Length: 355
Image (cartoon, rainbow, N blue to C red; front, side, top):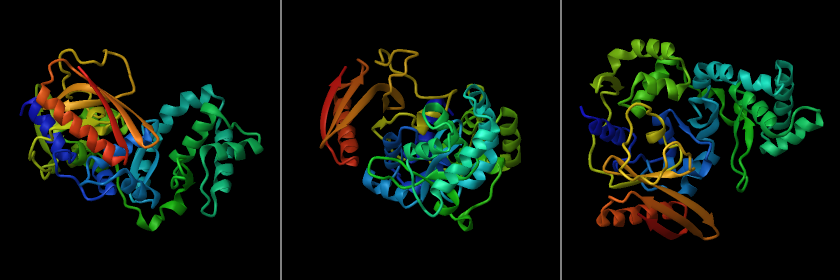
């Protein structure tokens, strides 16, 4: 199998080859957890893997609590299915909490402060009340606890990692928090362990390496190796340029080329694979080493450009910069992909393409 074959298999695995899933929740279940600190971009990550859903459709699933947003892998937000949140937290939260210890110490968040903050948050959310982070900060301030900036963020994150709170429904444009036991009853919970987490990762991300699993899950390489050993007989293993990759033997095979993909910020397809990923075209407009807070343009398993957008009133103002070798006929497909994104968010497209 070549590197290009690996990339094509991943497109099929993640349902980006035209074989979209019927709901956003099923996408979240397939991928296990979906990085989502850039909330609106993460909605597009889900939407582009479905069969024609809009941002409003995806938002309704989130507001119903079918999938939730919380800190669960790495110290950042992810979407996770409601029935999976508890067992994945059980597997991963101890490791993420260990990674957070340095920040806790630097910010003076000792165990007593975190525990007191947790108690205030529980009382503020009890009874099905949804609160924004600012409102939780006000409740903490009333009890003379840290209530702003990074200290507030980490007190709230601790409550998420302890499995006490998670996302509530959107309130207008604002995200809210809820008690996990009220948002996702325990009767709906599934069971799992590190081996199951590894299986789910390869189910939704394969072909992938042990290093990919470790980066995605926050588990150590040793923990990942033990998990893979426990499920190796349920996986296919392939070697590409000396790298061992695992995948689900029942995963779908590539169907057709997806044409042009406008992948959003922190998409699982580009974020999850430090060893084998999309090569950049010559003259790519993204300077090496710079995080320009942009999405990427994929054509024929090659990263050929970047995109930015601004939502302003009824318009989506979008700028796409392409490498100089992109053919004119491909630019027409880029325009069509931009139109699909505008339709997803129900905005009129104002598009500029350079390169």
